[in-house]
Length: 220
Image (cartoon, rainbow, N blue to C red):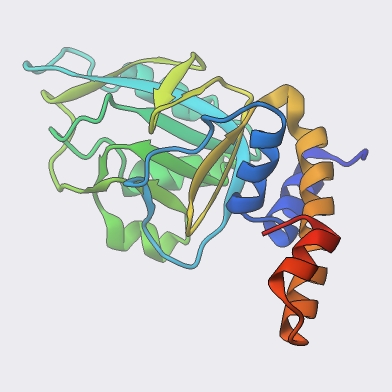
């Protein structure tokens, strides 16, 4: 399967879903790739897929001289088709992601953001039509409460280790991380499984017994 990156991401978005991706990753031995269940889409009917652009934020308890410096560098370095993945160590002290970061990220070509923490400006982000997954909402700024200390580094988000360059796929059921070196294999196997699932559904709708259909196609 030889597709440009954006074409591959569009194919995944149109043809696949997180459940079948998880099943495929299980089959390949990657059994801890789904993020915690509390990371939810801000708007329900959204599918997000792209290359992980990682950011690492930590709590602080004093105002800093240049609190946004690393954060600005990270956002300005975004490449097209990336998804910003923000690790906060599950902080609830602030909303580190908001409207202006969403606007800047979108204009750099980002497809969306995954935040293992809280966000703010949710109405504005929704109007921007920029997909964001998060754990909840809080209106306070990060200054004096949290700071981005690094980016393009390994992070743990939602209980999953994410490296820059991995592929993030998210829909209403959750967020899955596909290791970057496995993408084509995962997509090929997942598309085959979707085809078998479609045939299974058709025969079940014809009234055939689940046992008989399962023995024929091997999927549930």
